Image (cartoon, one colour):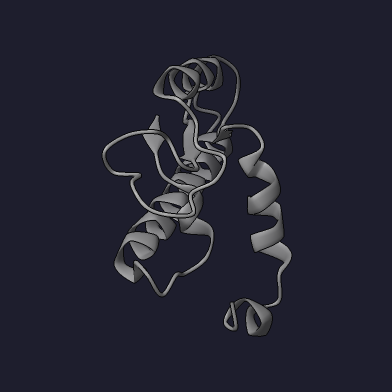
Length: 110
């Protein structure tokens, strides 16, 4: 299991190095999942992609959909038992989907 971030889906002018390291993790884990599947290994790889969790690191103005540490921990535990990729909280999947389909030229203007 690795805790990556929703931030790995796209770059961000506010924290480009953070987003870049998270993008590396997402892609590395995807490669590990493919390798394990291709070799018929029974290795369980879980990619946990949290949005904002109410911790010292997630401080700032205009944060939305902030999860409590308790809720995030419960969803992470469930993900480890059931899934390969999980967004914390689950509604962050919607943001991930939008970021993936948003044209790059439009995203760069945000």
